[in-house]
Image (cartoon, rainbow, N blue to C red; front, side):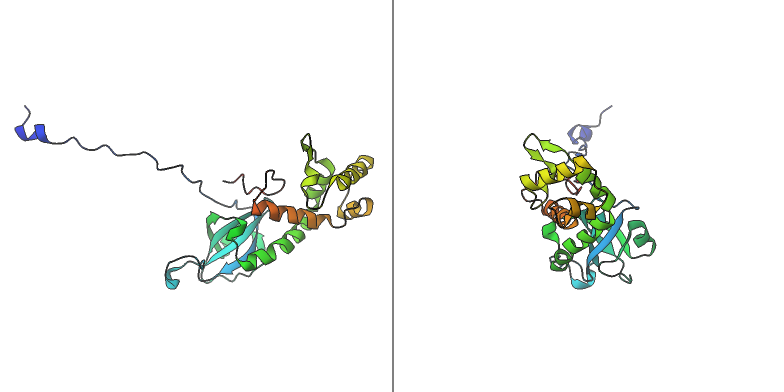
Length: 216
């Protein structure tokens, strides 16, 4: 039998599981990815409003060969240097780096990171020469009017046909071969500049090398 006071009791509220906007994808770095330290902020990011004593040291890094920028927590006692390179797994095993804070864009980089980015990339493009030679040998048209080669800074119609005619005669074997047989004087620098442009993202419609957009 229902008691009088029960008939005025409100039914319990159902929990509201409705999301407020899309859930953000959690960022992480695969353990076998190579990582290069661009800058170390021992007192956290300058734009962080937390008191200095409570800020977590962070590092701005770029991963290879997917060319994506991240901010990662750094252990306070870590012996780690700018431009140091290792796999993410090795950095964490040595208690140097911890978990990823977030993926960042070029505009989030410090002045130190921006200054180091292009020369570091140019050096790493040389280290990954085989992959980029494949680009010069096998790249195709993206649209009926746009070839992928023309997305490289400074490569216009004349340079494009110069590269295509040379590779049709014989595939390129290395960067020096491109320099010797075409009008391109520094292919590794052109690729590094294109990666920087893709990280800057402004006005970029096609991504040849960086996975920065894909990881969002």
